[in-house]
Length: 307
View (cartoon, rainbow, N blue to C red):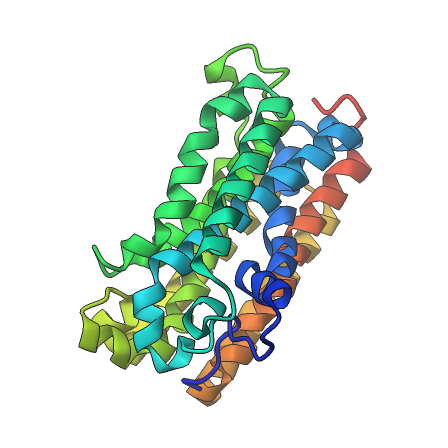
């Protein structure tokens, strides 16, 4: 279990090392949240190819910058942790200068996309950027960095809503009233929940080096209970959102599928901690299912004007 790391690289190719560090394919994990936020705030915006493309570019830029900076900030920690010694910056497969270039390029893409979307997207863009890039320092300050990571993903929903509705908003208050805060909270808690059990793999390392995490503070049993509680709260918010927003059977089926996959994750882990990687990877599909169900339900049931 302790040897598994999605950032590990076997090849010495710099381009492959860069792709592994950025894990661009995992942008597909974040992007549906942005589109779900857009659909909940202003469905008609998703029928605009320009908005769709700029949302995708903004998410790609922000995630790339955040992943690169995370690897830079944690370089010394990753050198010490046996689980992460195979990462590109640690092994030297990728120079640190390339990582800094990725931070700069990703940030430029993100801010440029926000500026082209609307003035509110640009106004809020530094908030999301700072939150994403400050994540690696959370574990140095407190024992719940999982909530920091969760909020980083939850605010992707916020960003999607601002991208979609910002140009039509009659003011800041009108814009904030359109944000699907329940969905922001649900994604935050869901991501925090699986990050809690993922951190069990580093429990002993975190304790030895004074790094904060729920497993290091609460132990394995306490961390699993907290993870389950966070996931239960997330599912409750998603279910309530279906009812309160008048969503239909497609969105409800998405929540049911999400509940089944969450239950499957926890069943896997309770059969053995060596199943944490398998449980963790289930979330790549789970996020797409939740978001796609909401988007499909809204686009199939509401008129193109998006009101």
